[in-house]
Length: 285
Image 1 (tube, rainbow, N blue to C red):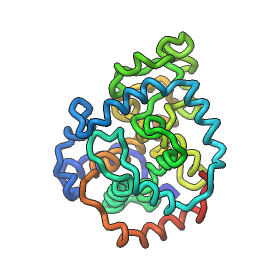
Image 2 (image 1 turned 180 degrees about the vertical axis):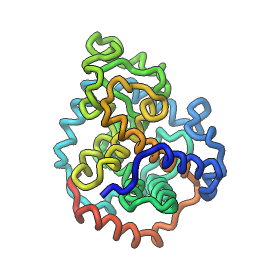
Image 3 (image 1 turned 120 degrees about the vertical axis):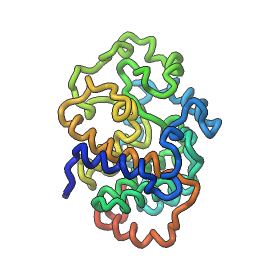
Image 4 (image 1 turned 60 degrees about the vertical axis):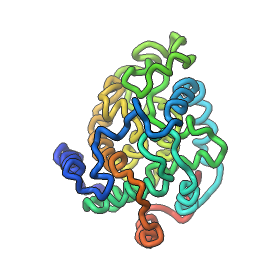
């Protein structure tokens, strides 16, 4: 049961928490230092987005959805998926070269410290779990990074918009207009997003978690929407209502990154019990 209201005051609480430096070490870092794509901390970032923006086409997304959304690759536990993420570093992250388990724990622990409901804490732990797509040989440009709609004009507020010049959809009259194949107000559920871990994990977990959690998972990388205020013309009123939940999640996802690893051995019993409240022992991936 969702027992919080997605209103502005709750988002304000998160913003004040960050501004006051109440996170451990990462909270001391200036907010302007995050998502610095002009001078990313890692030299993989620009090359990642060059490939991502070149190859994420409507046709590619359609093929990936057909390939993976049958959820027939394997069945595994959440802990098996987390163990894999402990070996993965996200090439699209301009801030820090954390393995993914560290990032997930930092996110969920900050949410827990703020006293939010258990499903919100669990969302923090699980939100990047879709990166297990790399287990099946997918390149990172098809798994991680900011997401955006395909099938319509690419916004110039997406990171590195210049790299869309090489995307074939840019020259396709069906996909290159403002509205492309979509009707205004069609709702994001009817929009194909660039393929990656967000959309994939939404389908993996859609039967188990509250709707605000699923919106956080599905759209947490859609920065052009929840930060840059683009693509509102695609949204219906329900998307706009859920947007406040996505924005509420974002500071925890972004501003908790730190080179100091949480103690997984100590935390694991708590998360084991939390996972068991919502999810079966084995899940279809």
